[in-house]
Image (tube, rainbow, N blue to C red):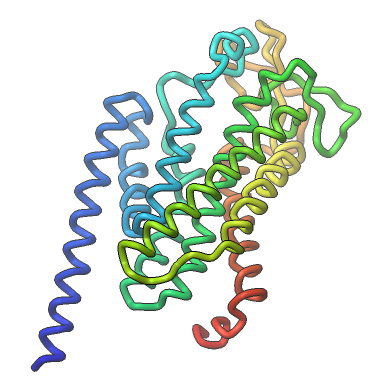
Length: 302
């Protein structure tokens, strides 16, 4: 009877957490829509991603909130200059593809991590959560590289063909300023994750701090941005706006003019590459942590 009461209490707790997370994620998504952070078609995907991140707990929520805040901030830095270059972000907010590109993989891993913690598997929780934060660090690094790199006084060069110069904002184009910004963006998420680990350990009275996992977040977050540039140069078509004379990744330039294709044999968009890299870099993170730190988990969880 006593065991039955404990099971019922746990089920009630899990149900409460899920319901509260669903309500909060829906409210936050609606607030983001009203604030024009997202478009109307991104309402449901944003609520879904928010729900999964909330299930992951403070160590997922705080880094993800940092990513959203910092990426929003750097997007506004040098806005006038970006408008002159034709690289300014659409003021209508992120659409559904952009939301899922940056949030689907980290959100799924955060959901799995939260589930692992609720079943008292703290080792699996740490692995999954760290992989989730690696995805956030990559997205933050990529955003910082893109939004601050375009402000560089030097012309970007294709990562895979350094002798080829491209216009600011073109996928695969890199500058020293962009790469330094990328490393800084990844470092910020790593440091925030470290602080969140200490906070979570204090709240739950369990030691969840692992400095090596923080180093992995920093390094793989930056590596993800480099991989994004390489794949973007190879997989994304390049267009040129006949009106502005600016090279871009999009068929329709921000000025509204239909651009002319000048490079590339594939039809992947920026969001497709973001999602692909997010999957690859988080899988690299999981494999790295399993092989180096917790090889016994491979056997325990088969």
